[in-house]
Image (cartoon, rainbow, N blue to C red; front, side, top):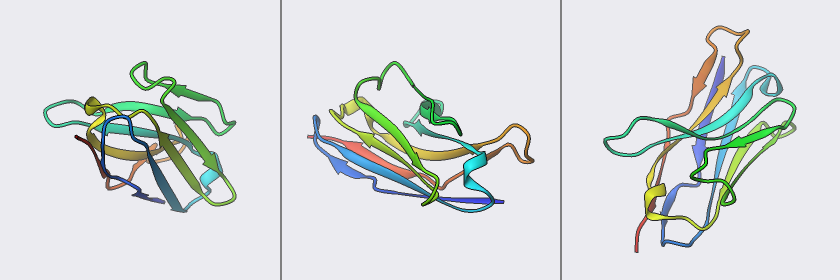
Length: 118
């Protein structure tokens, strides 16, 4: 079992920055790939950024160069640094832990709201 708790969401003006943090507890954090997803009103949930157990990262085209995902296996955290925020980044952001060899394969946090507005 893995429990994920997100923090760091809020209201920010366009061009601003926010840092989201995902704190994990329970099973071995370092065996899970971590990712951040987001879901805007009326849209499907989409993956924003992911980081493997080895530290390799990948990003959605819409956030490349603006967002950075990182993990700290000693602290059991996965963070998402978001810079140059745009109106279209407004969404609920969810932390995800994934390991295809485990059951269940996915764990989700409860989500944190990010609103970009002037």
